[in-house]
Image 1: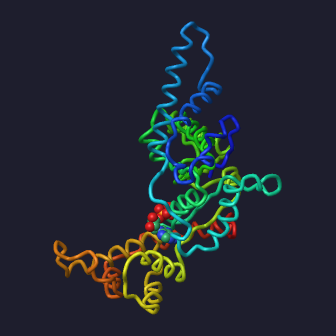
Image 2 (image 1 turned 180 degrees about the vertical axis):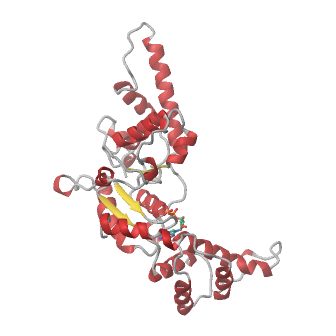
Image 3 (image 1 turned 90 degrees about the horizontal axis):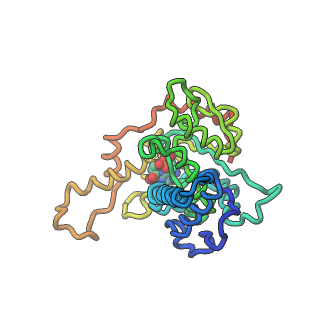
Length: 342
Ligand code: ADP
C-alpha cells in the first residue's frame, strides 16, 4: 500500500478536493503535472544542445503517454468493493480499518507517534479475498487503486517496465490517497537469479527503491529484509466454518433462495477446505441448477425459481476444493513465525 505524500504537486488538483464520486479517473492536469515533475526529476536530464526544447517536448510526450497508459491499464476502475462485501474475516478487517483506512482518511492525525506503516502484506492461499481486500481499502478510503502483477509487468511492459514502476509510484503520490496493490509480490521480489535478464533485474531494483529497500530469498518467500519493510503481515486463511457460513450468506444476500439456518450450517460443514472463491463458484453452480428445468427463452426474469438446498447438494457433488490441503502448512508456519495478530 502506497500512501506517500508528494509535496511537489499542486494540492488543488488532489482527488480529495475533487468530487468524492470521481477520484479514480485520469485527470488531464495530472498528466501535465507528471510531465512537470518529470522535468524536475531524473526523467528530464538537462540538455546542453540547441535543440533542448525539441528534446524536452519529445520527452514530455513520452512521459505523458506512459502516464496515460498507467491510468488506462493499471488504475483499476472496476467493481466497487465495500468492506461489507468481504465475509468471514472480521478481525482482520477491523484491524485494517484502524491501521489503513483511518490514516488514509485523516492523514493529519496519524503523524509522529501515531504514524502507521505504509506497506501491508496479505498472505495466504489463493482465492481467500486478498485482492478483494485491496479493492475494498481503495473504495472505502476513496483512494485511487493501482493494481499490478509481475506477470503483467513482464508481458505488457517489457522494455519500459523500470520507468513504468517509477512513473506508477509518481502517479500514486500525485493521486494520494492511493493504494498500490502488487499481486504475487513474492515472485516479484524473489532473489535475483543468475539467468535473469537485465530488464527483470532493473524492475526489481526499482521496486526495491520504491518500497524503501527490500530483499528476498530463493524459494519465493520474503526474507528478513523484505519482511521488515512490511510492518504489518496478515494471514488470510481459508475460511473456518463460521467464515464459510458468513460467505454463503453474503454471496446469497443478493438473490432469492430457500435455505434455512440449518441448511447454511450443514453447507458450511460440507465445504471444509473451500476458499472464498470456491464458495462463490459453488453458489454460481447452485444458481444454475434450476435453469435446467425452465424454458430460458420464455421465462419471465421474476419467475426464476429460488436457489434451494438441493441445488447446492447437486452443485457440491461435482466440485472439489481448489486449494490442496498439504499446501497450507507453509502458510501456517510462516504465520506463526512472522504474522501479526489482528
Ligand atoms: P486472492 O486475491 O486471495 O487470490 P480474491 O480476492 O481474488 O482472492 O478472491 C476471488 C473471489 O472470491 C472474489 O472476487 C470473491 O468473489 C470471492 N471471495 C474470496 N474471499 C472472499 C471473502 N472473504 N468474502 C467474500 N468473497 C470472497
